Image (cartoon, rainbow, N blue to C red; front, top):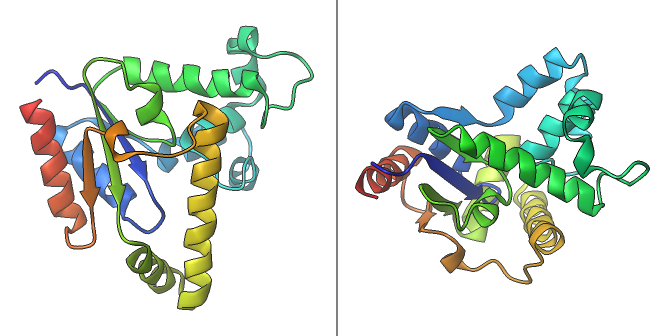
Length: 207
């Protein structure tokens, strides 16, 4: 087994978080997601609200940086130009990308993070996975989970899909996200998270 990193890209309502956790369990690897960020927030003595408020749709890496605050800036200060707006500046993007690379470099990890699959595309031993589902089903899942109405959930799916497109354009200058950016595309319309995870784990073993 040469694969040491699995990156999971996600669309809202596709159950990617459940899939990622199960993949990590199958492989016996670390799973890098929101739980780690919550611990980072505690260590940095900032509130969860501060962390979640860093961006409208905070990615894993941006939440890491927000949680560690000045400590992260001291460590990666060479990448940041003083006075720049961290949310939009090229320095902020470079900082996020550097952290993604460092997480991946440790190996044996499943990363649920926006853009990690694109950033690590040319790195060996990485399996890049997109977990998605049809828009209508994603909206119905979101409505069921939140207790909201379907119309509101549909708008939320559309909003987060729009944020996703804007993220790829801003961070990687991509006008369109293509299936060929991933080694494996998993549609959870029919597949349960458990079945999807087994497929991904098999792909890791077979790679």
